Image 1 (cartoon, rainbow, N blue to C red):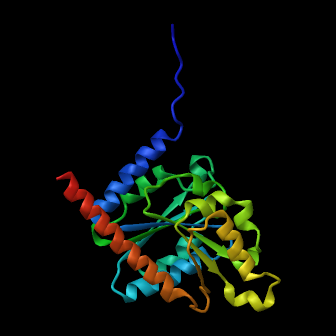
Image 2: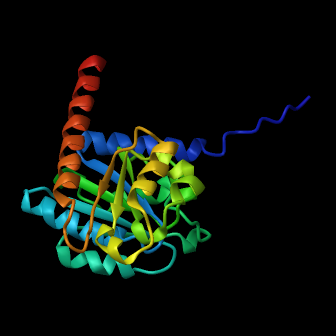
Length: 232
């Protein structure tokens, strides 16, 4: 008698994510999975973040996710950092970056010469949050023009992330959006999620964001060191 067994369809994806994480830890690269709606300002946030980190002497790279184009990657190339494009259209046009694409991109990146790697995921607030890529932190960029209800409508994104950047707060005087209501809605979904209001255009909030990155990188390195000592 044959008994069919249904495998976890995510098993292969999660295994590759675990391999990715081992590589990141081995070389001491702190990896952020950046997610948002289309147009929330991820690429501009990355441009400003990488400039700030470079001024601190940190070495950065980006895996740029998109369905078809290289438009966002072209904006990052002038920063003088390694950028690898990960398009999903040749693999079925997925609306998120998969761990297999990250795994393939790593072969083209100098991990031993990096401090930070940013994965700019494809713009939507649904499926990107469902997949482990091997990153150390998931970050959601929510922009003020999106309104107050997105955390309630897309709760998984806000439950999975370790940081929320509330971007474009400089537009508040021109919008019928109440920032305290946005913050309250985020808290209703995930009361532990920190929020940093920022404006990638003006630089408001950048210092707090970079401090969070530096603290997270230090904590990740200490955690990895402790796990290595425990493993003997």
